[in-house]
Length: 234
Ligand SMILES: [Zn+2]
Ligand SMILES: [Zn+2]
Ligand SMILES: [Zn+2]
Image (cartoon, rainbow, N blue to C red; front, side, top):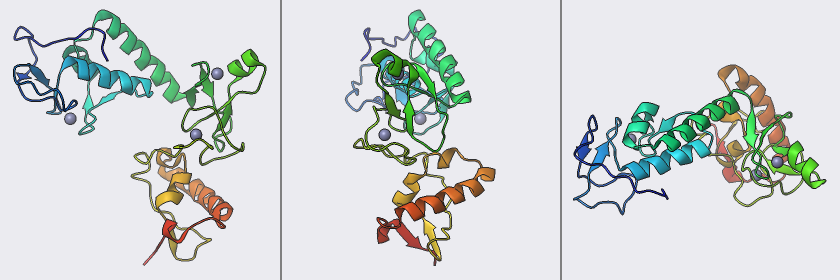
């Protein structure tokens, strides 16, 4: 992936070097190659670390996390162990800044023109990009969830019509179970949870509002909800 292959040498000071295999690349296990031990304990070479962190920045992250153990790596550590070139450092720092701004305000990058677009209606995943719309003369809409051109009917809070558009399950991992008034003695889990796009981002105070959203969703979904989607609360 990297244009220039970066390598560690015994001259690299202040880096714990080992000959163990790369934890981020199963094919990189040559015992004659030096690799660095990250603060989380995992092993990397500069190229895998650069690519891994670049991807995280492209996904809008504001900090770097080990893909194996999810521990955070400070930027200074990444800069050193990924042997970032001056050009890479500038690009990383610029992206970190942009992503921070993007996270502060609810922005997404438009898949059509790569400009930041703000969502005005938080209950709708279908968002129009004013730049693309003006440029093409046709309304250009994209999905806030999967960041692809919008497909299907507008005004949808759960997903668009693109294959594979589902809410990030990882985000919903810690999502609290919520009682549904519609289904007596039932709690929401599994695929119904996936309907709640902003669930994981909600704070405790917001859960009351969320419960209302679930009820509304459950009513809308009543015809198609399968038995497997609901677990008994006993
Ligand atoms: Zn790790
Ligand atoms: Zn656009
Ligand atoms: Zn989508």
